[in-house]
Image (cartoon, rainbow, N blue to C red; front, side, top):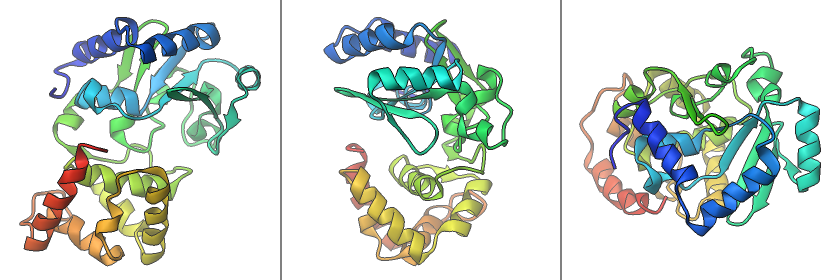
Amino acid sequence: MPVASDLYSLKRRLDRYFWHNDSPELVRLRHVLDKYFFDFDIVVIGGLVRDFAREGRAAFRSDVDLVIDAREAEVALLAEMLNARRNRFGGFGYYCQPWKIDFWALEATWAAKTGHVRVLQWEDLIKCTFFDWDAAVYNLSNRRVICDTSYLDKIRKQELEINLRPNPSVLGNLLRAVRRLILWNLKPGPRLWSFMKETLSDETFAAIKRLEFAEHPHTVMRHFADADALWRYLVGRECAVGKPARATQHSLALETTIAGNAAQN
């Protein structure tokens, strides 16, 4: 399935998935949402909306991330009732097989709590994501998609860029950047190039390699011996200004090998 043609098409994809899907896992999800979350105004943010925008249902393999328009104390009470575990970023994780739902209060968004973004309404939330491809939300209360008017154009360009540079997980975002660039065959924008150049070292390479092994069944980092090898590969795919560069024989061979894992990630 291609990138959604417009925001109405994206909304229809999300509407069908959430409200017209009678698979057991969606029936389960709607039950959980109705029982615990629909007393609040809530949105889905991040991976689910992004994946439906770029490829539809087939691309979605992540958790469900919810933001709740309620006071932080109210969300904490909900988490206590659900026996949800607090995560590192001010939210909570709740497991209800086959789903993992991460949720947090709008006012507890990391960028808001640290003063990087003034978050008062849903439109402010799209300024808070590290990657521009994640800067979209779907309001489950009124079935509205909220994103920048250029959101789908950015995805069509196949260029991944930083939306908000300050973030609480440098290693996590470095790993996500590498995996997305390789597995989704993307080019990095100038700010993302700078971020990777500044943060990728032998030390961080080893750290994200361990992190990937712990979190992903199919790994990309195992194809590289060290930070220099990874960097040479990335530069071999795209030059530093984001324009196509002539691939080396090594990068072409490695591309073929890694591509075999892409469908499984």
